[in-house]
Image (cartoon, rainbow over all chains, first blue to last red; front, side, top):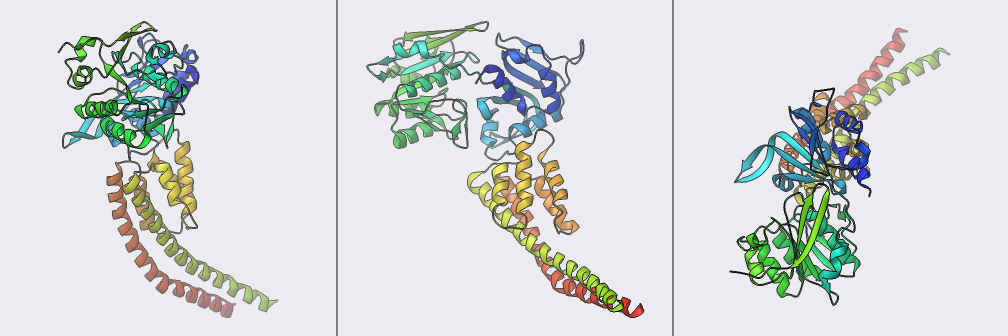
Amino acid sequence: MERKYAVEQAVRVLPRGIRDRLRQEEDWDTGRWEEVRLRAGRGLFVTDDTGFERPVRLGEKEIFPVTGEDLRQTLELATRSSLQGLTEKLSGGYLPLAGGHRLGIAGTVVLRNGTIQAYRSLSSLNLRIACPAEGMAQPLLSRLIREGRFQSTLILAPPGSGKTTLLRDLIRLLSREGIRVGLADERGEVAALRSGVPQLDVGALTDVMDGCGKGEGILLLLRSMTPDVLAADEITRPEDTRALIQGANCGAALLATAHGTDPDGLQLREAYAPLLQQRLFRYLVTISRTGSQRQIAVQPMPEWRG
Amino acid sequence: MRLTGKLLILLAFLWLGGERMLWYQKRCSLLSDLIGSVQIMISELTSRETDTVTLLRLAGEGERACAAFFLRCAEEAERMEEGSFSCLWDRSLENAKLPLGDWERRLLSRAGQIIGRYDGREQARLLTALNCQLERCLVLAREEEKERGKLALTLSCCAGLMLILLL
């Protein structure tokens, strides 16, 4: 899917007035938009692929107005009037949309037993447009596959730098190489399943578990799908780590992502320390971003320093 | 000629009475079907947290009297580009011209403010309460059908005969 069609598809969840105004923007059909933000009482903003966020104007000076009702209606369109089954995703702060796009949510939450149950009111919405970046991982493949086996790899990069996109492309390419991948997609960010069908290309040999924790998903995949590679986005909990260790002990290669820039800092994190200590990852992939350009580097995983 | 006229008047009044009697019958069968459909929705919400469009399609499956209403709602919900689901629901309810009383119509309209608005469990809870009310409506509608259905037919028949005598 071309980027400009991705933008066209993503903005379908916005109310008609906002959609029509966005279509009048000069760079509407360039496909360079990465985010559209709606802030109640403050206006409409667009972020392009350089990371620059600009307001969408109504006239010469005035910013296009956005009301709480616009936000409520966007949520209604994005959920297709179905909040059932989405409360967990809402409590994660965003909704997966058709086409792999995401709608980030901020506002006043209703807490019950310490977990987010609902949003009483919305203050901002961030429509993140999924960037189809097929082939992004191609240069890495020859380094990460040895004797037909994928070598366990950790992708490390700061938020918004394209970790999930790289992970998805790597999974797609592995699947094309005939390697069976089990993907624990807890928040539906990687494959974006809708009615069982991945909205984003993760390859024909990839089995996806979503809607459950990564730890549970990994163990279920291990039992039921016998994957060659276990993949998961953003390992954060000790149970996810335990499941990955179990997977590695069963002979599956690992592919995961982590927020951050400093490889040494990973050793201090509770979720990653056991994985690094046991040297379960062979390679570290880092992404750095300059403007709209991304640099991807592969290096052997640094030694554990205790 | 006169006899034919009288016969036609009698038939017209009988038709009016029959129509009313049929309305009561249709109302009962519609309420019974609605209860069945809402029950399916409750089960789907409880067991699978089915999304609204699929929920409406399942509620509209089969030969139920309310099938067309649910299917139309599903179609419109799928195409929805503006407004809210409750508005769409009310619009469909208005266009469907279902044989329902005011109170039953208001109850059904309330369902539009429940479906899709809360998590699955809460929706199921609220729809269960609504179904209880629909069940009470069905009991009353059956009583009305027995009492007023025949009464309507008898009255219209008498009115027709009286008019014939007066003419």
